[in-house]
Image (cartoon, rainbow, N blue to C red; front, side, top):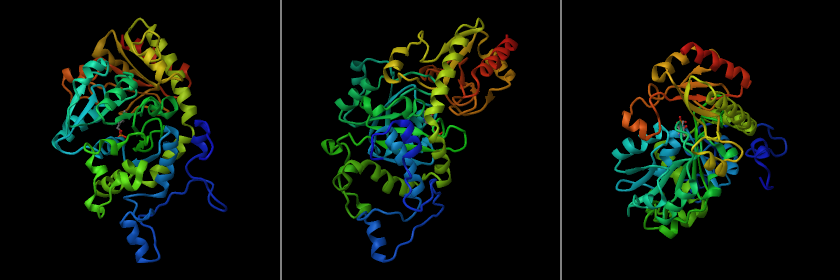
Length: 428
Ligand SMILES: *Cc1c(COP(=O)(O)O)cnc(C)c1O
Protein backbone atom coordinates (compact mmCIF):
# COMPACT_ATOMS: atom_id res chain seq x y z
CA UNK A 1 0.00 0.00 0.00
CA UNK A 2 1.21 3.51 -0.66
CA UNK A 3 0.88 4.94 2.85
CA UNK A 4 2.93 3.84 5.81
CA UNK A 5 0.14 2.05 7.62
CA UNK A 6 0.49 0.14 10.89
CA UNK A 7 0.48 -3.65 10.81
CA UNK A 8 -3.14 -3.94 12.01
CA UNK A 9 -4.19 -1.88 9.01
CA UNK A 10 -1.94 -3.77 6.58
CA UNK A 11 -3.42 -7.09 7.77
CA UNK A 12 -6.92 -5.92 6.87
CA UNK A 13 -6.41 -3.62 3.89
CA UNK A 14 -3.27 -4.67 2.05
CA UNK A 15 -2.91 -7.18 -0.79
CA UNK A 16 -6.08 -7.23 -2.91
CA UNK A 17 -7.24 -3.66 -3.56
CA UNK A 18 -10.39 -3.72 -5.69
CA UNK A 19 -10.96 -1.13 -8.37
CA UNK A 20 -14.36 0.13 -9.56
CA UNK A 21 -16.97 -2.63 -9.65
CA UNK A 22 -14.57 -5.39 -8.59
CA UNK A 23 -15.30 -7.79 -5.70
CA UNK A 24 -14.65 -6.32 -2.25
CA UNK A 25 -13.13 -9.61 -1.07
CA UNK A 26 -10.05 -11.24 -2.61
CA UNK A 27 -11.28 -13.53 -5.42
CA UNK A 28 -10.09 -17.13 -5.67
CA UNK A 29 -8.59 -17.40 -9.15
CA UNK A 30 -9.59 -21.02 -9.50
CA UNK A 31 -7.93 -21.44 -12.88
CA UNK A 32 -4.91 -23.43 -13.97
CA UNK A 33 -4.23 -21.14 -16.90
CA UNK A 34 -4.64 -17.61 -18.28
CA UNK A 35 -5.65 -16.45 -21.75
CA UNK A 36 -3.67 -14.35 -24.24
CA UNK A 37 -4.58 -12.80 -27.57
CA UNK A 38 -1.52 -13.31 -29.69
CA UNK A 39 1.12 -15.95 -29.77
CA UNK A 40 3.75 -13.24 -29.43
CA UNK A 41 2.27 -12.06 -26.11
CA UNK A 42 2.55 -15.58 -24.76
CA UNK A 43 6.09 -15.97 -26.13
CA UNK A 44 7.26 -12.88 -24.28
CA UNK A 45 6.06 -14.36 -20.99
CA UNK A 46 8.15 -17.46 -21.55
CA UNK A 47 11.20 -15.33 -22.29
CA UNK A 48 10.59 -13.32 -19.09
CA UNK A 49 10.38 -10.29 -21.38
CA UNK A 50 7.01 -9.37 -19.91
CA UNK A 51 5.40 -10.28 -16.61
CA UNK A 52 1.98 -11.89 -16.54
CA UNK A 53 0.15 -15.01 -15.47
CA UNK A 54 0.10 -18.06 -17.67
CA UNK A 55 0.07 -21.19 -15.55
CA UNK A 56 -0.76 -21.53 -11.84
CA UNK A 57 2.26 -23.77 -11.14
CA UNK A 58 4.37 -20.63 -11.57
CA UNK A 59 2.10 -17.87 -10.35
CA UNK A 60 -1.54 -17.27 -9.47
CA UNK A 61 -3.09 -13.85 -8.66
CA UNK A 62 -4.81 -15.01 -5.43
CA UNK A 63 -1.47 -16.26 -4.11
CA UNK A 64 0.36 -13.13 -5.19
CA UNK A 65 -2.05 -10.77 -3.40
CA UNK A 66 -1.58 -12.74 -0.18
CA UNK A 67 2.21 -12.87 -0.66
CA UNK A 68 2.17 -9.09 -1.17
CA UNK A 69 0.43 -8.63 2.18
CA UNK A 70 3.00 -10.79 4.01
CA UNK A 71 5.79 -8.99 2.15
CA UNK A 72 4.50 -5.65 3.45
CA UNK A 73 4.14 -7.00 6.99
CA UNK A 74 7.79 -8.09 6.93
CA UNK A 75 9.05 -4.93 5.23
CA UNK A 76 10.40 -6.84 2.25
CA UNK A 77 10.57 -6.14 -1.50
CA UNK A 78 9.23 -9.42 -2.92
CA UNK A 79 7.56 -12.59 -1.64
CA UNK A 80 6.10 -15.88 -2.81
CA UNK A 81 3.81 -18.47 -1.28
CA UNK A 82 4.71 -22.15 -1.22
CA UNK A 83 2.66 -25.27 -0.52
CA UNK A 84 4.15 -25.68 2.98
CA UNK A 85 6.69 -24.30 5.40
CA UNK A 86 8.97 -27.18 4.45
CA UNK A 87 8.85 -26.11 0.80
CA UNK A 88 9.55 -22.50 1.81
CA UNK A 89 12.72 -23.45 3.70
CA UNK A 90 13.82 -25.86 0.98
CA UNK A 91 13.38 -23.27 -1.78
CA UNK A 92 14.90 -20.46 0.30
CA UNK A 93 18.14 -22.45 0.64
CA UNK A 94 18.17 -24.37 -2.63
CA UNK A 95 17.70 -21.11 -4.56
CA UNK A 96 21.30 -20.18 -3.67
CA UNK A 97 22.96 -23.54 -2.87
CA UNK A 98 23.91 -26.47 -5.04
CA UNK A 99 25.97 -29.65 -4.70
CA UNK A 100 29.35 -28.80 -3.15
CA UNK A 101 28.00 -25.89 -1.12
CA UNK A 102 27.73 -25.49 2.65
CA UNK A 103 25.12 -24.15 5.07
CA UNK A 104 25.52 -23.03 8.71
CA UNK A 105 22.40 -23.87 10.73
CA UNK A 106 21.37 -23.27 14.34
CA UNK A 107 21.02 -26.61 16.16
CA UNK A 108 17.64 -25.76 17.68
CA UNK A 109 15.63 -25.36 14.46
CA UNK A 110 12.34 -27.21 13.96
CA UNK A 111 12.77 -31.00 13.59
CA UNK A 112 11.44 -31.01 10.02
CA UNK A 113 13.95 -28.35 8.97
CA UNK A 114 16.77 -30.15 10.79
CA UNK A 115 15.94 -33.27 8.82
CA UNK A 116 15.54 -31.40 5.52
CA UNK A 117 18.94 -29.73 5.78
CA UNK A 118 21.09 -32.37 7.49
CA UNK A 119 19.65 -35.49 5.85
CA UNK A 120 17.78 -34.76 2.61
CA UNK A 121 19.84 -31.82 1.35
CA UNK A 122 22.99 -33.71 2.33
CA UNK A 123 21.97 -36.36 -0.21
CA UNK A 124 21.86 -33.54 -2.75
CA UNK A 125 25.51 -32.75 -1.95
CA UNK A 126 24.88 -29.75 0.32
CA UNK A 127 26.83 -29.97 3.57
CA UNK A 128 25.76 -28.42 6.85
CA UNK A 129 27.52 -27.37 10.04
CA UNK A 130 25.11 -27.41 12.98
CA UNK A 131 25.98 -24.69 15.49
CA UNK A 132 24.98 -23.82 19.05
CA UNK A 133 22.84 -20.65 18.75
CA UNK A 134 24.35 -19.38 22.01
CA UNK A 135 27.96 -19.80 20.83
CA UNK A 136 30.11 -16.67 20.72
CA UNK A 137 30.60 -14.86 17.43
CA UNK A 138 34.26 -15.82 17.66
CA UNK A 139 33.40 -19.53 17.81
CA UNK A 140 30.73 -19.22 15.13
CA UNK A 141 33.25 -17.62 12.75
CA UNK A 142 35.29 -20.83 12.86
CA UNK A 143 32.46 -22.67 11.09
CA UNK A 144 32.60 -20.48 7.97
CA UNK A 145 34.04 -22.26 4.90
CA UNK A 146 34.93 -20.94 1.43
CA UNK A 147 31.85 -22.78 0.09
CA UNK A 148 29.42 -21.45 2.75
CA UNK A 149 26.38 -19.95 1.01
CA UNK A 150 23.97 -19.04 3.81
CA UNK A 151 23.32 -19.01 7.56
CA UNK A 152 19.98 -20.30 8.84
CA UNK A 153 18.09 -19.95 12.14
CA UNK A 154 14.66 -19.41 13.73
CA UNK A 155 13.57 -16.25 15.57
CA UNK A 156 12.08 -18.48 18.29
CA UNK A 157 13.01 -22.13 17.89
CA UNK A 158 10.19 -24.69 17.68
CA UNK A 159 9.91 -26.30 20.22
CA UNK A 160 13.08 -25.38 22.17
CA UNK A 161 11.90 -21.72 22.44
CA UNK A 162 15.47 -20.50 22.11
CA UNK A 163 15.45 -16.84 21.06
CA UNK A 164 18.05 -16.33 18.36
CA UNK A 165 20.46 -13.40 18.63
CA UNK A 166 19.61 -12.30 15.09
CA UNK A 167 22.18 -9.47 15.05
CA UNK A 168 24.99 -11.89 15.99
CA UNK A 169 23.99 -14.28 13.22
CA UNK A 170 23.62 -11.41 10.72
CA UNK A 171 27.18 -10.29 11.53
CA UNK A 172 28.41 -13.87 11.06
CA UNK A 173 26.66 -14.17 7.69
CA UNK A 174 27.64 -10.77 6.35
CA UNK A 175 31.31 -11.12 7.32
CA UNK A 176 31.23 -14.33 5.29
CA UNK A 177 29.58 -12.53 2.36
CA UNK A 178 26.40 -14.64 2.53
CA UNK A 179 22.76 -13.96 3.49
CA UNK A 180 21.07 -14.74 6.80
CA UNK A 181 17.83 -16.70 6.36
CA UNK A 182 15.44 -16.53 9.31
CA UNK A 183 12.39 -18.72 9.82
CA UNK A 184 10.05 -16.25 11.55
CA UNK A 185 7.11 -18.67 11.99
CA UNK A 186 6.68 -18.50 15.77
CA UNK A 187 7.22 -14.77 16.26
CA UNK A 188 5.21 -13.76 13.15
CA UNK A 189 5.81 -10.32 11.61
CA UNK A 190 3.51 -8.91 14.30
CA UNK A 191 6.06 -9.56 17.05
CA UNK A 192 9.35 -9.42 15.14
CA UNK A 193 10.66 -8.19 11.80
CA UNK A 194 14.01 -9.96 11.34
CA UNK A 195 14.94 -7.60 8.45
CA UNK A 196 15.24 -4.76 10.99
CA UNK A 197 18.00 -6.76 12.70
CA UNK A 198 19.98 -7.69 9.59
CA UNK A 199 18.27 -10.81 8.24
CA UNK A 200 18.17 -10.94 4.44
CA UNK A 201 15.53 -13.58 3.72
CA UNK A 202 12.58 -14.54 5.94
CA UNK A 203 10.57 -17.74 5.69
CA UNK A 204 7.29 -18.79 7.28
CA UNK A 205 5.24 -21.85 7.84
CA UNK A 206 1.93 -20.03 7.32
CA UNK A 207 0.31 -23.21 8.68
CA UNK A 208 0.84 -21.83 12.18
CA UNK A 209 -0.26 -18.41 13.52
CA UNK A 210 -0.73 -16.79 10.11
CA UNK A 211 -3.50 -19.19 9.12
CA UNK A 212 -4.19 -19.45 12.81
CA UNK A 213 -7.17 -21.81 12.64
CA UNK A 214 -5.49 -25.08 11.70
CA UNK A 215 -7.09 -25.10 8.24
CA UNK A 216 -4.33 -24.99 5.64
CA UNK A 217 -0.71 -26.05 5.27
CA UNK A 218 1.35 -23.35 3.58
CA UNK A 219 4.59 -21.41 3.47
CA UNK A 220 6.04 -18.10 2.40
CA UNK A 221 9.46 -16.68 1.45
CA UNK A 222 10.13 -12.94 1.72
CA UNK A 223 13.20 -11.15 0.38
CA UNK A 224 14.39 -7.95 2.10
CA UNK A 225 16.12 -6.87 -1.11
CA UNK A 226 19.11 -5.90 1.04
CA UNK A 227 21.61 -8.60 0.14
CA UNK A 228 23.93 -7.53 -2.67
CA UNK A 229 24.24 -10.75 -4.68
CA UNK A 230 26.27 -9.12 -7.45
CA UNK A 231 28.89 -7.95 -4.91
CA UNK A 232 29.46 -11.67 -4.15
CA UNK A 233 28.85 -12.90 -7.69
CA UNK A 234 31.42 -15.70 -7.45
CA UNK A 235 29.42 -17.28 -4.62
CA UNK A 236 26.03 -17.01 -6.34
CA UNK A 237 26.44 -17.98 -9.99
CA UNK A 238 22.77 -19.01 -10.19
CA UNK A 239 21.71 -15.41 -9.64
CA UNK A 240 24.64 -13.61 -11.23
CA UNK A 241 25.40 -15.57 -14.43
CA UNK A 242 23.14 -16.32 -17.43
CA UNK A 243 20.42 -18.96 -16.96
CA UNK A 244 20.37 -21.29 -19.98
CA UNK A 245 16.79 -22.30 -19.28
CA UNK A 246 15.68 -18.70 -20.02
CA UNK A 247 17.81 -17.78 -23.03
CA UNK A 248 20.63 -16.47 -20.92
CA UNK A 249 18.78 -14.17 -18.54
CA UNK A 250 20.95 -12.97 -15.63
CA UNK A 251 18.56 -12.49 -12.71
CA UNK A 252 20.49 -9.78 -10.85
CA UNK A 253 20.86 -7.72 -14.04
CA UNK A 254 17.31 -8.07 -15.28
CA UNK A 255 15.33 -8.06 -12.01
CA UNK A 256 17.50 -6.07 -9.56
CA UNK A 257 16.05 -6.40 -6.07
CA UNK A 258 13.49 -8.89 -7.38
CA UNK A 259 16.22 -11.31 -8.53
CA UNK A 260 16.03 -13.82 -5.69
CA UNK A 261 12.23 -14.29 -5.66
CA UNK A 262 12.04 -14.21 -9.46
CA UNK A 263 14.58 -17.02 -9.71
CA UNK A 264 12.80 -19.04 -7.01
CA UNK A 265 9.53 -18.63 -8.93
CA UNK A 266 10.57 -19.16 -12.54
CA UNK A 267 13.14 -21.88 -11.83
CA UNK A 268 12.32 -23.73 -8.61
CA UNK A 269 8.55 -23.40 -8.74
CA UNK A 270 8.57 -24.23 -12.46
CA UNK A 271 10.71 -27.34 -11.95
CA UNK A 272 9.65 -28.56 -8.49
CA UNK A 273 6.09 -27.25 -8.40
CA UNK A 274 5.28 -26.75 -4.71
CA UNK A 275 2.57 -24.17 -5.38
CA UNK A 276 0.05 -23.23 -2.71
CA UNK A 277 -3.53 -23.92 -3.82
CA UNK A 278 -5.32 -20.57 -4.42
CA UNK A 279 -8.16 -21.85 -2.21
CA UNK A 280 -5.66 -22.21 0.64
CA UNK A 281 -4.21 -18.77 -0.04
CA UNK A 282 -7.72 -17.35 0.29
CA UNK A 283 -8.15 -18.99 3.70
CA UNK A 284 -4.69 -17.82 4.73
CA UNK A 285 -5.71 -14.28 3.84
CA UNK A 286 -8.74 -14.52 6.14
CA UNK A 287 -6.43 -15.69 8.93
CA UNK A 288 -4.01 -12.83 8.34
CA UNK A 289 -6.78 -10.27 8.86
CA UNK A 290 -6.97 -11.10 12.60
CA UNK A 291 -3.30 -11.99 13.16
CA UNK A 292 -2.48 -8.93 15.34
CA UNK A 293 -5.51 -9.49 17.60
CA UNK A 294 -4.77 -13.18 17.96
CA UNK A 295 -1.04 -12.74 18.66
CA UNK A 296 -1.80 -10.30 21.45
CA UNK A 297 -4.16 -12.81 23.09
CA UNK A 298 -1.85 -15.81 22.48
CA UNK A 299 0.99 -13.93 24.21
CA UNK A 300 -1.01 -12.65 27.19
CA UNK A 301 -2.63 -16.06 27.74
CA UNK A 302 0.71 -17.87 27.43
CA UNK A 303 2.37 -15.60 29.99
CA UNK A 304 -0.41 -16.26 32.52
CA UNK A 305 -0.27 -20.02 31.88
CA UNK A 306 3.54 -20.00 32.18
CA UNK A 307 3.30 -18.14 35.51
CA UNK A 308 0.71 -20.65 36.75
CA UNK A 309 2.95 -23.59 35.81
CA UNK A 310 6.04 -21.97 37.32
CA UNK A 311 4.28 -21.65 40.69
CA UNK A 312 2.88 -25.22 40.62
CA UNK A 313 4.56 -27.68 42.99
CA UNK A 314 4.27 -30.67 40.61
CA UNK A 315 6.00 -28.82 37.78
CA UNK A 316 9.75 -29.40 37.49
CA UNK A 317 10.55 -26.63 35.00
CA UNK A 318 8.91 -24.15 32.63
CA UNK A 319 10.42 -22.65 29.49
CA UNK A 320 8.80 -19.49 28.13
CA UNK A 321 10.83 -16.49 26.92
CA UNK A 322 8.29 -14.10 28.51
CA UNK A 323 9.12 -15.31 32.04
CA UNK A 324 11.63 -13.07 33.85
CA UNK A 325 13.41 -16.20 35.09
CA UNK A 326 13.98 -17.39 31.50
CA UNK A 327 17.46 -17.57 30.00
CA UNK A 328 16.19 -15.79 26.88
CA UNK A 329 14.12 -13.11 28.62
CA UNK A 330 16.52 -10.27 27.70
CA UNK A 331 16.92 -11.37 24.07
CA UNK A 332 13.14 -11.77 23.88
CA UNK A 333 12.62 -8.22 25.17
CA UNK A 334 15.13 -6.92 22.65
CA UNK A 335 13.72 -8.63 19.57
CA UNK A 336 10.07 -9.04 20.62
CA UNK A 337 9.11 -6.34 23.13
CA UNK A 338 5.38 -6.88 22.44
CA UNK A 339 5.53 -10.59 23.29
CA UNK A 340 7.06 -13.72 21.79
CA UNK A 341 4.50 -16.42 20.97
CA UNK A 342 1.87 -18.66 22.56
CA UNK A 343 4.03 -21.76 22.87
CA UNK A 344 5.37 -22.92 26.23
CA UNK A 345 7.33 -26.00 27.13
CA UNK A 346 7.47 -27.60 30.55
CA UNK A 347 8.25 -30.81 32.38
CA UNK A 348 6.56 -32.45 35.35
CA UNK A 349 8.39 -33.78 38.40
CA UNK A 350 6.88 -37.15 37.47
CA UNK A 351 8.92 -36.95 34.22
CA UNK A 352 8.30 -38.71 30.94
CA UNK A 353 5.66 -41.07 32.35
CA UNK A 354 3.85 -38.24 34.11
CA UNK A 355 3.76 -36.28 30.86
CA UNK A 356 1.81 -39.03 29.13
CA UNK A 357 -0.62 -39.44 32.04
CA UNK A 358 -1.25 -35.71 32.35
CA UNK A 359 -1.98 -35.40 28.64
CA UNK A 360 -4.50 -38.24 28.80
CA UNK A 361 -6.49 -36.29 31.44
CA UNK A 362 -6.74 -33.02 29.53
CA UNK A 363 -10.29 -32.14 28.54
CA UNK A 364 -9.94 -28.80 26.76
CA UNK A 365 -6.42 -29.02 25.36
CA UNK A 366 -6.19 -31.58 22.56
CA UNK A 367 -3.27 -33.85 21.66
CA UNK A 368 -2.42 -32.92 18.06
CA UNK A 369 0.67 -32.70 15.87
CA UNK A 370 0.24 -29.01 15.47
CA UNK A 371 1.03 -25.78 17.24
CA UNK A 372 0.18 -22.16 17.04
CA UNK A 373 -3.50 -21.99 16.26
CA UNK A 374 -6.57 -20.69 18.05
CA UNK A 375 -7.16 -23.94 19.99
CA UNK A 376 -4.98 -24.93 22.95
CA UNK A 377 -3.09 -28.13 22.18
CA UNK A 378 -0.27 -30.28 23.53
CA UNK A 379 2.39 -32.57 22.16
CA UNK A 380 5.19 -34.69 23.59
CA UNK A 381 8.00 -34.21 21.01
CA UNK A 382 10.15 -37.13 22.20
CA UNK A 383 7.37 -39.56 21.38
CA UNK A 384 5.81 -37.62 18.46
CA UNK A 385 7.46 -35.03 16.14
CA UNK A 386 11.07 -35.74 17.11
CA UNK A 387 10.91 -39.50 17.42
CA UNK A 388 13.45 -40.07 14.60
CA UNK A 389 16.10 -38.30 16.66
CA UNK A 390 18.57 -40.01 18.96
CA UNK A 391 18.71 -38.91 22.63
CA UNK A 392 21.89 -37.02 21.81
CA UNK A 393 20.23 -35.14 18.95
CA UNK A 394 17.22 -34.43 21.17
CA UNK A 395 19.40 -32.77 23.78
CA UNK A 396 21.29 -30.85 21.08
CA UNK A 397 17.95 -29.64 19.69
CA UNK A 398 16.97 -28.49 23.17
CA UNK A 399 14.25 -31.13 23.56
CA UNK A 400 14.32 -32.91 26.91
CA UNK A 401 12.68 -36.38 27.02
CA UNK A 402 10.07 -35.07 29.53
CA UNK A 403 9.33 -31.90 27.52
CA UNK A 404 5.65 -31.16 26.97
CA UNK A 405 4.97 -28.61 24.26
CA UNK A 406 1.89 -26.60 25.11
CA UNK A 407 0.45 -24.30 22.46
CA UNK A 408 -1.74 -21.85 24.32
CA UNK A 409 -4.79 -20.84 22.33
CA UNK A 410 -7.06 -17.83 22.51
CA UNK A 411 -9.78 -19.37 24.71
CA UNK A 412 -10.50 -17.82 28.10
CA UNK A 413 -7.26 -18.17 30.03
CA UNK A 414 -8.96 -19.28 33.28
CA UNK A 415 -10.49 -22.24 31.44
CA UNK A 416 -7.09 -23.21 30.03
CA UNK A 417 -5.47 -23.01 33.47
CA UNK A 418 -8.17 -25.01 35.27
CA UNK A 419 -7.95 -27.74 32.61
CA UNK A 420 -4.18 -27.99 33.17
CA UNK A 421 -4.62 -27.90 36.95
CA UNK A 422 -7.01 -30.85 37.04
CA UNK A 423 -4.91 -32.91 34.60
CA UNK A 424 -1.68 -32.29 36.52
CA UNK A 425 -3.42 -33.27 39.77
CA UNK A 426 -4.71 -36.54 38.29
CA UNK A 427 -1.25 -37.41 36.93
CA UNK A 428 0.41 -37.02 40.33
C1 LIG B 1 5.85 -26.14 11.21
C2 LIG B 1 7.12 -25.47 10.95
C3 LIG B 1 7.79 -25.65 9.73
C4 LIG B 1 7.27 -26.56 8.64
O1 LIG B 1 6.11 -26.02 8.12
P1 LIG B 1 4.95 -26.90 7.42
O2 LIG B 1 3.98 -25.84 7.02
O3 LIG B 1 4.45 -27.86 8.43
O4 LIG B 1 5.58 -27.59 6.25
C5 LIG B 1 8.97 -24.95 9.53
N1 LIG B 1 9.47 -24.15 10.47
C6 LIG B 1 8.86 -23.96 11.67
C7 LIG B 1 9.46 -23.05 12.68
C8 LIG B 1 7.66 -24.62 11.95
O5 LIG B 1 7.06 -24.43 13.14
